[in-house]
Amino acid sequence: SAFSKFYKSYEQYLNNKQNRDAAISLIYSSMVQNEKGDYLGSNDNATKAAKLLDKNDENFSSIYNQFGRNHEELKNYKEAIYFYNQAIPISRDEHSKLVLQNNIGIINLKIKNYPEAVKIFANAAKNKLVKDSIDLGNKILDNYAYSKFLSNQYYNAEKELTSILSSKLRRKDLSGVNASLSHLADFFKNRNQSKSLYYAKAMYENSKKQEVLTMSWML
Image (cartoon, rainbow, N blue to C red; front, side):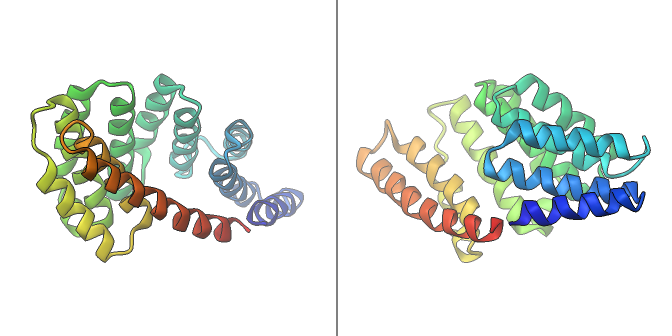
């Protein structure tokens, strides 16, 4: 499995006193554990990785991000926001920073702090990378439209949401498509039951395809 390969690399690097390479292998191990739902194990390996790195190493941004992802999955939202915010100033590039901003916005949606989510996504949507990096841009604009609807149930987000879904479908972005379908199912829930059911069924079918691809990557 991918986890076994990364963990074996970690042990080999550690035996050769190549601490930085050992830490990087642990970070990848931690990512695989997160994908498999082992969030506590993922946190343990991310913690081990942190102890092997110099305090100013650029890989701390990946470690903080991993802590954030694990805490988010464990519904420790305050801790997740803390670690995402820790990762932003030391992230290597604007793309990574924008991903982290998006993650914080999503948590605000989860805790129903909709005005804050709108503010975060509105700020992220102004970044030039939204146009330059299409998949990330779609993700942010989709979340922005959805957050505006959640903040104001009378807001008509249909045009924005369906336009972004079309772009994701053209790019075969399965995980992105799933998020869009979920948002559309929710948007139509109290507006048009048949449309809501249509998008919910489409999300279910798309999820099955995504699960097959995820499992093949982890083997």
